[in-house]
Length: 163
Image 1 (spheres, rainbow, N blue to C red):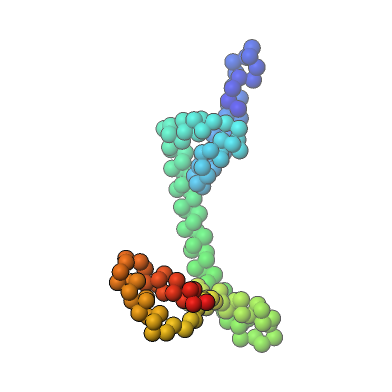
Image 2 (cartoon, rainbow, N blue to C red):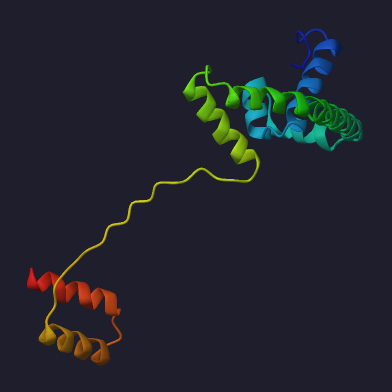
């Protein structure tokens, strides 16, 4: 790392130190956690903290973040430029009966999702059916009025006693 090459020499490998610092800052700027950076690079979290919180580290991080923001804006602009052409391709695939139906349906679902429509979800609902008579209803009423129990739990208990 940035330690002396040997005990006899007090020379640091500046290129290696800068390389490690750049990698720490790059990883930190994309959101990697200090513990993971330290583990991957074989350094301490304190080294990362020292660098990130230093004046030089702050300036470098600001520069990295600014560059990342510019790149994001460029990508967004490019996507917006390609969107009409991509929409034409999607329309052609959806209209063309010769295309694979799996491709067409998958594409249609994705387009609908992007438009704000959601794919129908399958839901499973379990419904218990039981027959109760007048005496069960009276017992249920008495137990609900006589206690602070949940009526659904009481009803389930009454039905289970019948079974």
